[in-house]
Length: 79
Image (cartoon, rainbow, N blue to C red; front, side, top):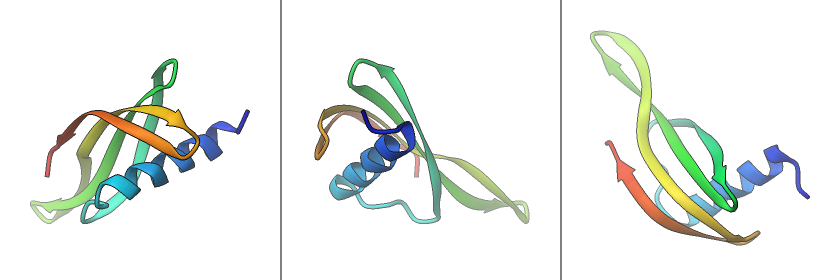
């Protein structure tokens, strides 16, 4: 089995093959919900009241079909 870091890096790259990387993207959190289903939260920086903040700018629920394909089951973009 691939390491968790390798798997999450692969899932991130598979997602960005299907969607455009958000403006000001700074990172993600990928959580295995169950079986081969994952929640991917994308984080972006934004400025508010002269402070740089970060927030979730996109959230995806995906199924890992195989090591080279994911299916997006649900998405929510907050940008």
